[in-house]
Each structure stands twice: as structure tokens, then as C-alpha cells.
Length: 392
Image (tube, rainbow, N blue to C red):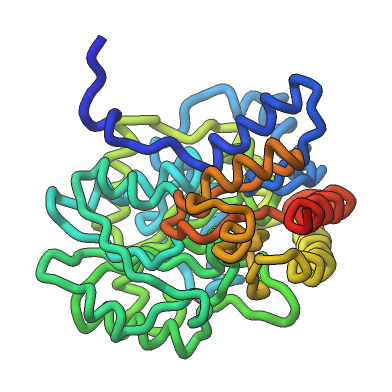
């Protein structure tokens, strides 16, 4: 059977592929330490579980909801935005869907025409470029170098802009680098986008996971003009340890949100009802579990970072948010005789049992990604194995 050219051209997610490979090897009885997936190792907080169970028990979870989300879910998003963004969003400015990843896809399918360009700073999360191409758009990459803190400036964006540029994608805190743009830096980027009538797509999924005094500033909160130009993507997966519940949402101007709702109505229809009731509790309920998890991630970062610095050939800068380390390994590859980062990570897996993610899928072929969303013992063991591997 002949597959479509579209699917033949699409790359597999390197993070999911690495995670699946690690699980397969572990199932074979091999000693594998997986630092691949961006998935908190915590169980969803009890109050959220109980809200879901209650919705199942009383029958609320048994039926379709509105395709773009329950009114109560939209109200919960509004409450969340009032608390953490400093402004309110109306019901017609919110759309809810099956995970932030699908919400991103719905956005691109809503705003991108064939040939439209999306500026994506690199390194970038693995699915951005493929989703743009699925919408028949063109990803335009702007290199955010490690020596510049993995950040871009308006001058960088200006050099990449053409008359086809329609969207600027910003992810802060970043997957995979963990960097955070300051309010001043975001103000400059936002004003550039407004002046050029370019939509800002703000992927804020890691906004609550910041460490060591760092602050997350939503770009949409900086001015009314920037807010009108911005579509915010967010969800509950990372902050609330709810990756399996698949809850994402977007806020923005009503015309774009309406288009995304139409897209959802013809694809997935509504997000699973029980997940919406769980998410309502997550967004509006007690937030103490969030802080407990955030502190655990911070401890892991502060413990593992200096150990990773000691690994020969690994050049790493300390992230401010998310839960990833993204070292440059070009020196390490040279020491081990590799010129391809994917082959390098494969050799590490085979020789040490440590599963990492190749930086190639993030647009950074001299880097690897390590997730510290796992327990400290595993992290220390994994970095110890990496050090011994490089010292052999």
C-alpha cells in the first residue's frame, strides 16, 4: 500500500522514539536508565484524581461536551489567567483540546496557508517544524547560540523576516534548553512582532517550572497591543503531573480561537470529559502540590548540574526552567571518534545503558538532551555512567 508523501516526509518524534527504545531494552531485562521523556515522575495529585472519580461516579463524565471545552473548563482557564497572567480571558477567547501538542497543531492548521513562514528559534521542541510543514507552511530557523544563552534578538528576527512571515514561535521556559527570556527581552520581541503584524505563538507549557529565583514573564501580559498579537498555548501536563490526561488549551483573539474550535470540531471533537473535570480542579484548586514538585525539580537540577559539568567533553549552561539539561557534546563526540550525534547517543545507550535524546531532532546536532524529571538516585547513577564512559 502506498503511503502519502506527507507521511513519508514526516520525521518520527526523536523524544518518543528514544523513550520507546529505552522501554523496549528494559523489557528485555537490560539495565537501562532513561533520561528521555519530558514527563514528571510524580503521580497526579490526589485532589485532582478525586475530582475525576467524582465526575465518573455522578455521571458527568459519560457524555460529549462542547467541542471546544466545557464552560466550566473555560472559566477555570480564565481564573488561572487572572492569577498567573494578570488579565482575564472571555469564553470565546479560550479553546480546549486533546493535549497542548494537538492544540499547537490546531493553531497551525488555522492560521497557516501554503507558503506562509513561521520563525522558529533553534534549538526547538521536536514537533514544531513538522507541524508547520503539515499545514503546508515553511519553518524558518533562527539560530539561538549557546554562547548567547539560547536566545534571539529582534535583529536576528529581522534578518529572517520576509513578506511571507506570519508567525513567531516563542517557547520560554524552553524545551530543550530551559532558558527563560526576561521581561525586557520579551518586550523587545513583542514590539517587533506588533510593528510587523506577525502573530506571536507563545508556548508557555513550562511557565510554572522555574528555579533558583528565576521568573517567568508571559509575553502576553506586557501590553495590550502584544496581547492582541499573541496566542498562548498551555496545559496541565507538566505543572500538575498530568501527562496521561492530555489536556491543552489556547487563549487569544476570538477569530483565531474560533477557527481552532472549528478545526477541533472536525477532528477530535471534545477533549475527554473526565480529563476536563480533572483539569478544572488542577487549575482552580489548592496549588501546594505544584510547589512541592517544583522544589523537587529544583533540587534535582542543583544536584545534577555540577556533576554533569565534570563529564569530559560535555559543555553545559545551567537552565532556569523546565526540566532538561542540554549540553553541547561536540568535544565529547570528537574524543570518542563520532561525527554524528545520533550515533553517539546510540553508543552511549549500548555501552552504559543511559538513554539520552539526540539533539538532531531539536535542530542542534552538537547537543544531547537529558531530562531530570526522574528521581535523584537514577540521575546520579546516569551521570556517573556518562563520566566513566567518557573517561575510558
